[in-house]
Image 1 (cartoon, rainbow, N blue to C red):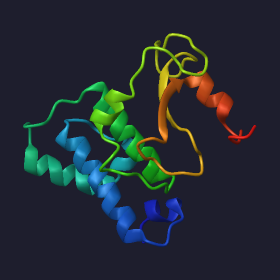
Image 2: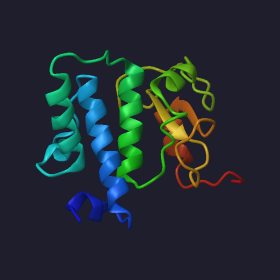
Image 3: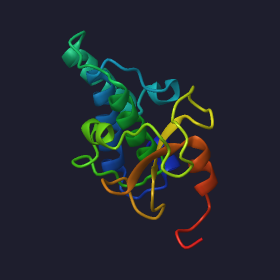
Image 4: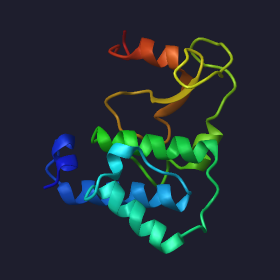
Length: 153
């Protein structure tokens, strides 16, 4: 079992490896480079990225903002060992839930990544997985305020 699978604390290393491989593949297919620590030799993301680069070369798909968000969400889910519904949560779905204002703070979304008003995609129910209907776009400040708070609170 490789180091990435151990960090994910899961018993099914083959599905973790396949998911990591697919994430690396999709990064390369869209002409994007994953995080440097994921490109270490032997990691599933690196293996998928290198395989896709060999197949696609310079013939890549467009990498819109929603595609980058979709890949970041998949990577986050994979690293936290949270299930991700790949059939329902797509870049097209993320474009559909895109809004101009935070539904919680009611402020315009925008600004640089990491700022209070920057847009993030978060799960409504922290106990559920990444699925259509459980994701919402909100401000970073709203997402941080929700951490550690249950639905009843």
